[in-house]
Amino acid sequence: MAYIVILNPLIIGGFSADRAATDVLGGWLPNSQVAAATALAAGLLTLAFGAIARLPFALAAGLGMNSFLAVNVVGQVTWPEAMGLVLINGVIIVILAATGLRAMIFAAVPQELKVAITVGIGLFIAFIGLVDSGFVRSSGANSPPVQLGQAGSIATLPTVTFLIGLVVMGVLVARKVKGALLIGIVGTTVLAVILEAIFHVGSSVTNKTGGWNLTVPQLPSSVVSLPDFGLVGHVSFGAFERIGPLSAIMLVFTLLFLNFFDAMGTMTGLAKGAGLSDAKGDFPRLRSALIVEGVGAIVGGGASTSSNTVFVDSAAGIGEGARTGLASIVTGLLFLAAMFLTPLTSVVPLEVAAAALVVVGTLMVAQIRELTWDDFSKSLPVFLTIIVMPMTYSIANGIGVGFVSWVLIRTFTGRAKEISPLLWIVAAGFVLFFARGPLEALIGA
Image (cartoon, rainbow, N blue to C red):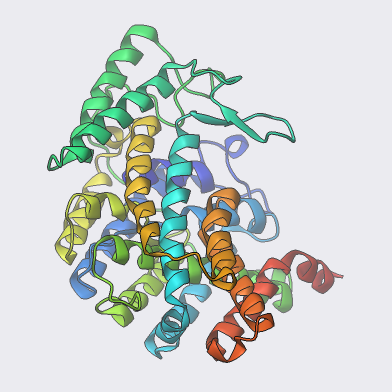
């Protein structure tokens, strides 16, 4: 998960105003300050999750949420105002979790959909790995939208490094070697550093056709740097005045759905992968986990890092045998160390991390064996849940399509009485979520 300390600043921050996501007034978040706050928030929240929920799930700035803020929100409000909306979203989530309503919604989800969420997340993170590595690229055409490598060929050293890492990690996992992923990541990173020193590949910014994606594997000039916490507490609630109460509420509603169901889906998949969930998909200390995860949005807004949520990358630790909060406590301490060791974390190229994601995705997709496909009124919602996640790059989208299709198809096949009233309400909420664009335009008009 160390990549989030590098990636989050690139999404919501920048090195200068012309290389950053600027807000409605031209404001921007300095890269170094976002990196320090990202590591701080992730460290404290992951420690809290390990100590309170006692589960091997780590928290950090959510990728879906930070991208939504950078692309869709700050064009209307300032960065402090956007973080204020994130904080409000977190307060609502904590209230829902503390009252038990969030756990009730969790329990109302059919077991088939819970398994489908796990499988979908597995495909999703594997697809992320394939894309991040350059193994799968945009074709630039309407059809097909993606292609293998460049023009159907594996033509770059970074992608070859990914393939070597994938084979090494796959062999080690197949042979049940302890620490297989860690060994594979370290070994492949050493190879990447050697290749860069010999061939001077460079980054994808300067070498668009064959450069390393995000991080160039080079030995850093220094190992330690002092963190800058200038963004902590940089929050405003002026969005309601700037864009009006209705528009601000619609943004909070969207953030709430992204946060709520991304986290629910991720925790369902991780608990299943760790063997911690029961036959219904529930797992120990569910309410505590949901409350701490909700606090992650509050802390993320207050630290200007975007909402912090449970990371699907926790599956890497689970794949190595993590089953308790001790894993989260260790991860949290390492995040706090990362505040001072940002130069060291930047050595590992994304292509190496991508290989680990594909391996972990394979482990999660194996849960598909628990699904039966003889009832099409269940099969279609399950399939849509699984396939929409990677195809739309969103866990929340997959869950929403699954919920809505489950309610509609089961109802029109005479099984409406089997559907929980809460699932009806959540499905209706997702209909609003999917129609938020026209609704926001209508409200604006």
